[in-house]
Amino acid sequence: MTRKKICIRCTAFFAGLLLCLLAVSYVVAPKGNGEHSGFIYRDAKGIIAEKENTVDVVFLGDSEVYASISPMQLWEEQGFTSYDCSTGGQLLFDTLELLNTALENQHPKLVVLEANATFRKFSIGEIAYNKAGEYLAVFRYHDRWKWMKLSELFGPRDFNWTSEMKGFRLNLDTKAASQKDHMKASDKLKDMPKKNAWYIEAIKKKCEENQIQFMILSTPSRQNWNMKKHNTIAAMAEEWGVPYVDLNLKEKELGVDWQTDTKDKGDHLNYFGAQKVTSYLGKYLKETYDLPDHRGDAEYDSWDKCLRKYHEQIDVLTAKLK
Image (cartoon, rainbow, N blue to C red; front, top):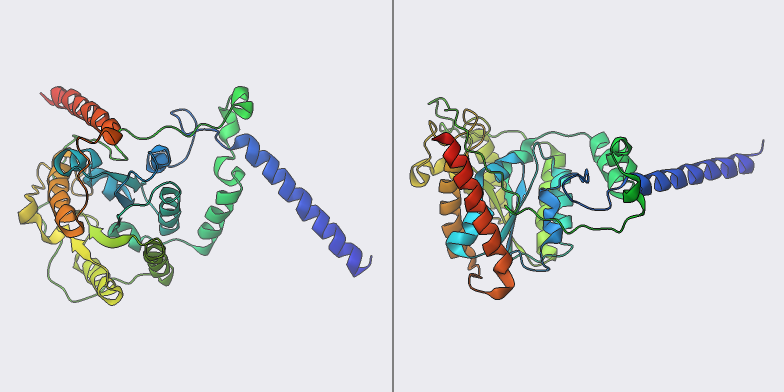
């Protein structure tokens, strides 16, 4: 067999394979982002259903974000809009993808990257698989056929669901943390993989390209944060000219009590700790970035409706504690 025929057969094979993957991807890809759609990162990507250009601040990062920052409280106290584009165990290529998703219909004034995920390791293979999943849904939804309905295959696309808490996850559980000081003075640095640094810079550049202000934040966590990590992020932020706020160094100002304000022994904050962090952060962001106050604006009535439901859920959970 000639080399030319081999090339033709190989090309035909891969073209056929691609067509099959495209066909299967069309079948298994969710046609919406509702409760039973199977849509991945549903809460984090709920921002796609927010009214165009109505979100002032986008928070990126892992579970430390959705446990610590309440957009509804920021709305109630400061009047600016925000959304937690956060997922558990988030990897930085997911972070960049979530930012790109947010920018499809939003032009926020500020993007805030929570730093805990910046040290989480990932492989080139994971990057490649994730990238393939962006274009071929079969890589992300290969087992969705187990519960999907036939009507979904031919139904209209409907991505109109958004999180009423704007990505925040309300949790009133309490499991006290140890009294060990997690921020002991040190001048050492925590090693960061080059891939991670590349993605952080890519996020920063994406913000610059879209004329969006960018800052890095560390929310309080006794189990996940320390001075070595702080020093690495602080040095990086200084080199790039990016603001960095580490709330682990401001526990007294925040009033965080690790006996009552954590749901899992200092790994994440609970609602009571999130209240304190959100209140402090809201004032800081409002003063530093001159964010607008939309309260009373009819265009943002939906946020007042979400706020009422937010308080209703808090009341229900609080009643269970009594």
